[in-house]
Image 1 (tube, rainbow, N blue to C red):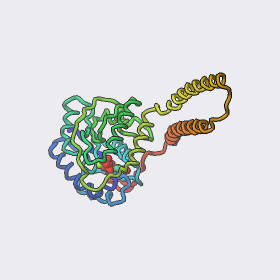
Image 2: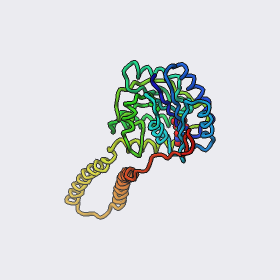
Image 3: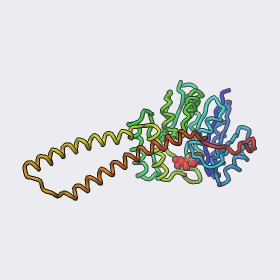
Image 4: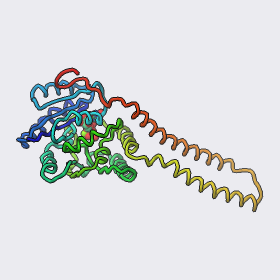
Length: 312
Ligand code: UDP
Ligand code: MG
């Protein structure tokens, strides 16, 4: 019988965990005789999530868990789960029931019967989210699809079921700065998009502030596009043209009307403007340099402290 590994990153999800587990077990029963492995990744939680996981592992032999030595972020947790998963198919889903387990049979059907390598989910509305956040999210997807060759779908969640082929492809990308939405798009493969209506978190609260999301989107752009690096050249070229026109105007004015000293305010404006552009462009260079620096260190992406078999 084929086996599905369910990878669940958990960061302070003590309240949501039992609710999630009940749902996923129910789905697993519906999908019998398909076998299951529930692989929870505790991302350095401080609220007792780990003891909850230990208990689940005692109750049910299908439960496995990895517990990080500290909080490494959701990307690291998903990677750890994908690396440890032993199933023929691997699904990643959130612990807060925002990725409904009830969709799993449809995803499984798409991958086993309809010839897809992967079935992924996309939420069709963003209800219950501040409008500014939705607007920024839409702009982000427009921008990144424009400037990178990874195909990133608006509203895509990290909830997806992949066949082994695709999981191995994803794991063959060894980058340190991981942006999963981009990685999944970049590896390609046949993906079926399953839309669903957004659901609110079952318990606990979101770990993403606006600022964190903003930084995450910048990471995504830097990881999957080098277009910002061209900004300096483009602006430089434009300014050269402007400067040339300006010179013509000044030469003409001097010849026609004589030299009149003045124009200190306009000079200040130009200096400040150019200074700003230069610092902005150096900032972009700095971002890429910083990422390159982190990549070259080749630090592990996560550290495991404990698994269902005990301390590591
Ligand atoms: N998560 C994680 N590490 C983190 C932040 C979040 O493993 O540093 C997990 C979290 O437990 C949840 C999933 O990632 O299962 C999505 O997080 P959340 O629900 O807070 O994000 P949202 O759904 O609001 O985008
Ligand atoms: Mg959530």
